[in-house]
Length: 261
Image (cartoon, rainbow, N blue to C red; front, side, top):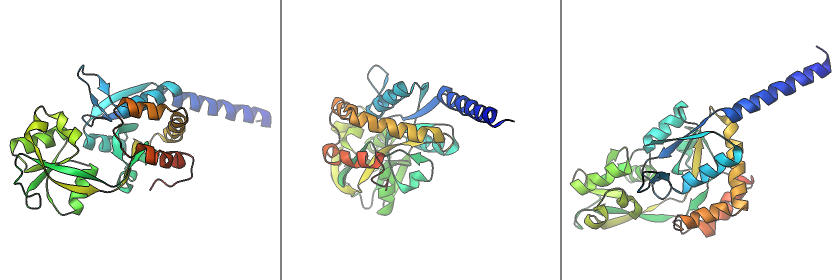
């Protein structure tokens, strides 16, 4: 084949490949009940900070994105097995999760912070009791490191309800998590607290879709530059008190000036 024709053939193949990748639907797994990142609002619509960011990226890239709500364990399994292309919903960027799939740079970082144990009675001793937590969560990993006895559930709602009904002695998590069960915020009291390690919250990307990682990281950086990430964070109640202090860490990662871990 003459050299010019060979170059033309290669160019056409690359164009067709790029077009095929752009046309391929992007299946996005969304955490079922992790407000303010991802949840169903009072009208049953999928909402949340991560959902809004992902929607912006899909629109900018012209991608056909389809949302599929799953519990956290289902998100992690879906990414590792290639059932999902992307997973969102306040996912902690940890080395263990990087073994399951690719991670974007974090959209935000949380410095060391306390999360609380909630129980029906202030007399509960969390050191000897059974603590309800969500499978695959950073909270589960932290509790295991402390050697506590766990009752592991698929969703935040199930874990909160376990503490509410006495199936577990306490629930470990954020105050916002109590809102997943009606009446839990009034019935459960804070009995103890424990420091969580500093961590970034990122999107997970299936290794079967390598075309998505760079393009989504690039769009996240553009959303930072345009002030969109800041506006969405404000829209959802400025929920991360460390956001202003740490937003530059996300930008440095996106520009290649900071390692993910």
